Image (cartoon, rainbow, N blue to C red; front, side):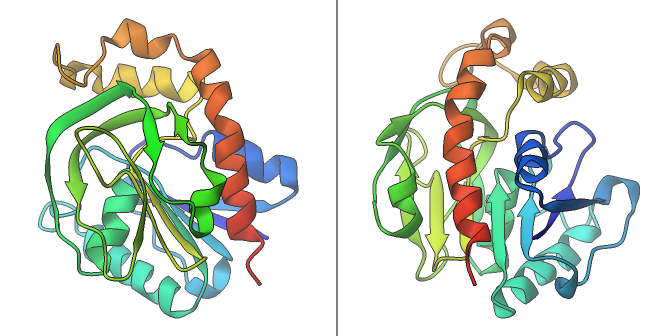
Length: 228
């Protein structure tokens, strides 16, 4: 199986996704868009993973590759290949399919519980309640015909699926202690007290939290890679 990821900033890489791919014997490659690397052709991969990033999917004038990346998402869906979007990646998929992306009612930064709201399709692979890492200020409307899978109190659209090949996750199941340290070092200054934003020192105490969500990540990735 050929896995390809799109990385938008140096400090939000595939982390536990790369560990899973290597453990399963899959081939994993990546495009680092912040370095100006060219997007891949759809025929080069079986599963496309779109990582997070601090930019908005609406900032096409500042990040010229956003428009081409959205077209790639549409091409992947049309070719019936699997795609997983994480945080910015989930917003990218939603926007590429015509849904609105906009500032959420609250920023979510830290480890907060997510509730499953549907057991349809990939929803059955999610626990009833689990606690992943969040790091976002924007949210999205669901694309047409998508099924909402999970929610938090401030942000109802935390996960969605479209058929059995497309999955969007607003949160970070791929987080590892190393990737969390990189994220806090690069973007910790954006944390504000109160609400749904935890202090950096709380976010960094994450080894057990990372370990707890990785089995969920593995189930979802295995499912996406099992599609004929």
